[in-house]
Amino acid sequence: MSTVDQPPQTFLDSGSTFEGRVAFTGVVRIDGHFRGDASSDGTLVVGESGVVEADLELATLVVHGTFRGTVCAKDMVEIAATAIVEGSLTTARLRIAEGAQVNAAIEMASSGAV
Image 1 (spheres, rainbow, N blue to C red):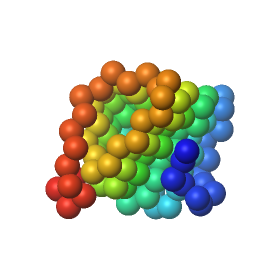
Image 2: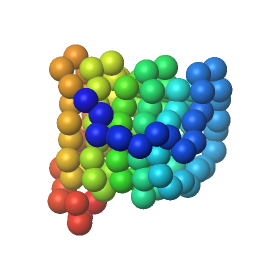
Image 3: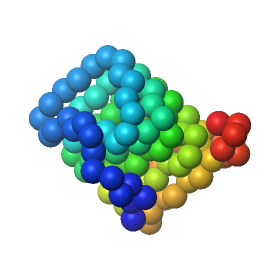
Image 4: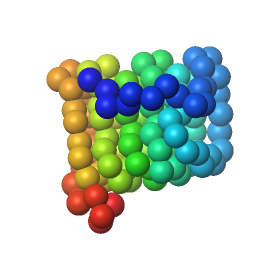
């Protein structure tokens, strides 16, 4: 289902934990645990074993694991069937697969307004 065709440039593997503020370009995949803030013109992929508790400002968010927090995505938020999402989502486009667990406030905005 994922719209991400590029391999990740950075990877936080399962069992890893990171806390802080990050800025990145390209595609980053998290299969470990990240807590903090992130900003990017790229894509963040939360893998099936990934847990992200953060405030995010980015182009695209793809969630297969767990995301808790707020996200402002300029292009798209994609939520897979295996995902658990809690918090607040603001995005231009949203794709939610059947079976995903979503408990979030959702605001749809044009891509220029996000």
